[in-house]
Image (tube, rainbow, N blue to C red; front, side, top):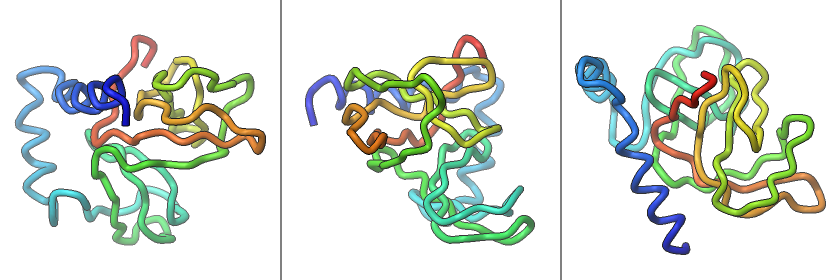
Amino acid sequence: MNELMKALLVLSDVNLPAQEDTRADYATYEAINTNNDTIECTADQDYNGGDITLWGPYCGRVNANVNRGEQMSLRVKDGILIVTSAIGGGSTFATESQEVWFEPATGLFHDTEGEGMVGVGPLATTMNAQGAITFYKRRYWIEGELT
């Protein structure tokens, strides 16, 4: 991992909580955390194992298929390498270490920020011939200017 990627991963942990008055909210999420890398919560919709979702301040990878209303396990460990081809139209992901933006409403990833999107990590490898990218998932999602 190059020095820029290391710096981005370190910086991602200091982006949240964004305001002093929200620190108590984050402490609540930590209190129900079963361990430091996995969170148990109730699914707000149906998910497939491997899906990326947001829960509270966390950006997590769903560990197994789950139906809405069931308990699910989210892997929230910082720096997990995610491979995806769920790419939003027009995104080219041509620059390593650029921000990867996630659109929760569609489940698609974008290379430029748009309304309702959140930053989920730096790009590890540019888009390949099959239309897939890899990025280092942050533990906490970050709010963009348009979110």
